[in-house]
Length: 170
Image 1 (tube, rainbow, N blue to C red):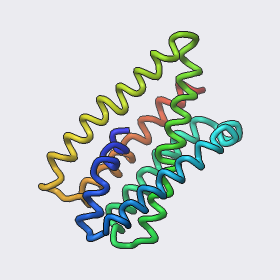
Image 2 (image 1 turned 135 degrees about the vertical axis):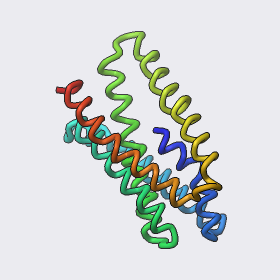
Image 3 (image 1 turned 45 degrees about the horizontal axis):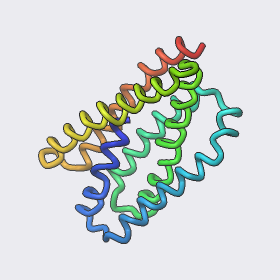
């Protein structure tokens, strides 16, 4: 989730550094949000059809692809638009499956505690750490390197998460 928050906090700056107008930046943000809303509409069907393990692991890989596209192909409008549409998966699917898992593992009054833990760790702690690191290194390394570090983090997380989720959701 810290990767998502880096995106949320740095993406407009990155696009501006690559001479995108405010209107174009707004269009990219709007397309990401609309794709996310559409994904949430279909999530109940998707979760019934696909295994949660596959959905979560898929979001990790697609997030890596998204950061790769943004980092290396920021000057290609169509590819950047595709990367924004992938937000439906990188955020929408991951968030929905996370909430579903919270509902599964936290029963009764503990569901709100589970959501609090999820939000505190992902948006709170993850967001603070990710934003601080990205902010600190942005001027030193540049946006392209930051987005590609995020991509590498996703490739590192994938096998760790695979091993862990296979045990947990077996």
